Length: 360
Image (tube, rainbow, N blue to C red):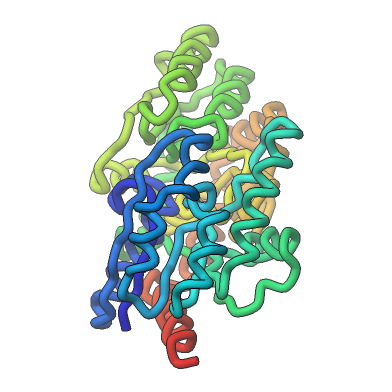
């Protein structure tokens, strides 16, 4: 079986979605399934729409010698019209890997309606779907109705190997010193770092520290805003922006932190929440999106409304003052991690699904 995969840019791009795609490609190749990567150039959303009229892209896809063509849904602006033409010319089925829908993010009303229309057109032309969560599946069903042939294959959190032991996690929680918070995500508005900084500014007199890991170059204007926000709140001594970090550095930060806080406007899943749980980190996330599939409010973390800075600050304050509660939540986080499928499990689910499509 030969499988094509359409992505933007490089498969090595740092994000949860690209990590998922990399894991899938690696698994397919280990199982002797050839994968042909088709990389489309990154650009602005408006310019990406013009890809639908590119003879080069159309002929590149039409001539692919594959049995199935996977498309990362991120590529929807480039393909929402082109796919309809393509389906009439090729025999291979089109399968979309859906991480989350752009139209579910926070945009001005007219812009959001436009994205919704584009994504609805794109999704309606698919022969099958790979979803990263039940929440993502439901958001697609809300747009197009019956999703037809599909598989829900959750991302995993085991890329760093075995989780920390319960003893290590408990000793870490009881050590004197500040509550160590960790934010992992590219510095873009959707990830909500500005919300976290605003919340922490309300408890600036308490003993905490925040490490921020994520690419600062994706949105330079937003990064500049964050730096200004930190300075204005006099938090430069408490907040460290590490920029993009190696896996070894990130693993060390996971192991030495107490709490993961990523109050995103929307997450189709949220791999970092699960990775943190493998290190015994309770997670604070948004009620919007799929985080509720991982986080049981008040047990292994907290769910807050997007932009709910006061409530977020209160949850952090509770864990600063009560390390016994921190330990209870850390143990619950570790238990949730252990109950979750591994990358191997989830990628095999997708492989089996693709093989069944090929056999039809």
